[in-house]
Amino acid sequence: MAKKQVRGLLDYTSVNNDEDLEFAPLSEENMIGMGLGASRDATRWAFKGYMLELHQNLASFKKKVGRKRKPEFGSIDCQRAMLIWVYLHKMNPNPNISLKNRHLISLMQSLGKNDSRIARLFPPEHERLQSSVSTGKTKLKIDDQWRSKVCEKWFNN
Image (cartoon, rainbow, N blue to C red; front, side, top):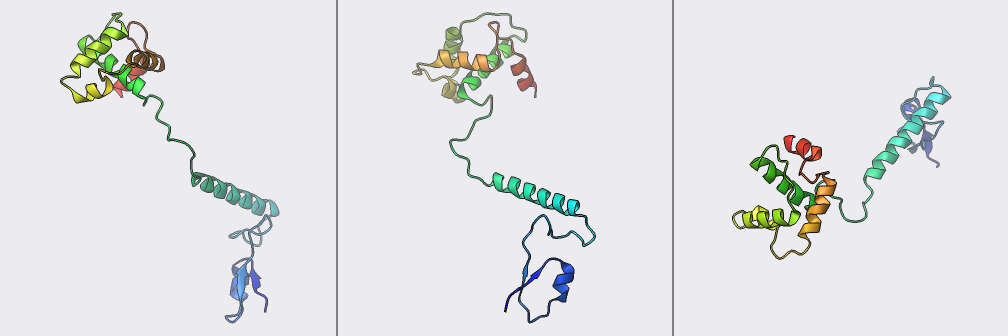
């Protein structure tokens, strides 16, 4: 015996206990929860909204390919430049100094002898520290006098 297709609550209540039933598939003409008096447009809009929400939920379950992206300023380059910026601004709140990256890196390496967090960012045997600090300065928009609105905003938050 064929299963009876049920489209709504009235169809469901009309089915006998011994009859097999199945719910009708959702479509633009048949949407669960839409009453018999609903217009065709209302049913169609409800179906399209249901499909849009279903698509958005399924998209969130897709496995992302590749390595995880770091936050915009979360790179090691930005961390190094930010640490130097914080150090300079703690020493002098309004610095108008023009120091070379090489001098500041050697200063941070000497401070790193007493602090393991600084030593991790400025290891003595690293060859690319100067270019790394320069890249961080560029991303954080730090000028030659070590002024940066990005760093100020980030530090004050």
